[in-house]
Image (tube, rainbow over all chains, first blue to last red; front, side):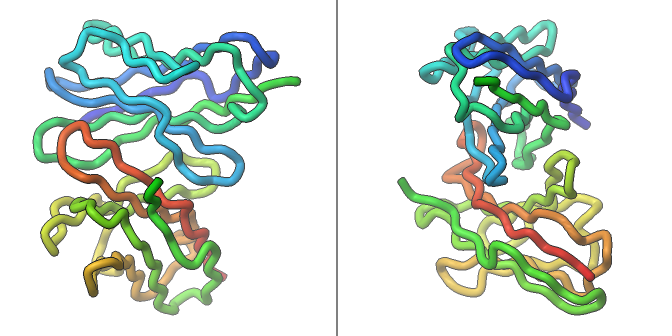
Length: 115
Length: 114
């Protein structure tokens, strides 16, 4: 079974700074998908970014980018020029490519952006 | 942008009562999911649904739980006899396909069992 580990329960950073959230996972599969979801205080789950394991290029979405290290099974999220609206819980999630459609989530990192 | 909508936003129910949580997935999506999040904990998979049947379920999804797509738009989660430990946020999600297609989540229903 796959597991996802987020080792930073909480982080805080000054507005406009860059912050990196870490995520590691364990799988025996070669093809899979990784996601970062954001959960602000309003509690909705918002997709931030996704990465296909067969792509070497790191995914980027505006201020959000990932550092995907397949051999190390690491999938960190970098937020550049952080904004107050980035304050949220961030969840890393794994999805298999073989019929199994469920997302397996990590325990989350609570990120606070300090004005 | 199309959204997944869930109703109600908050449901308070007496222990032992039946509860139905409702979801309207994105209209052209084919894969539907329920997840739950107990307060302060991670999001956990409950069940996936495709082609009018359950495609996968977790060990949490026992005989007290059922899902249904009663018409072309709604997707429901029923808990037959609620327990205190069923108190959680329940998220519905939908996806347009398998593989890397992202799952889009609703805003959740907060279920409180008294």
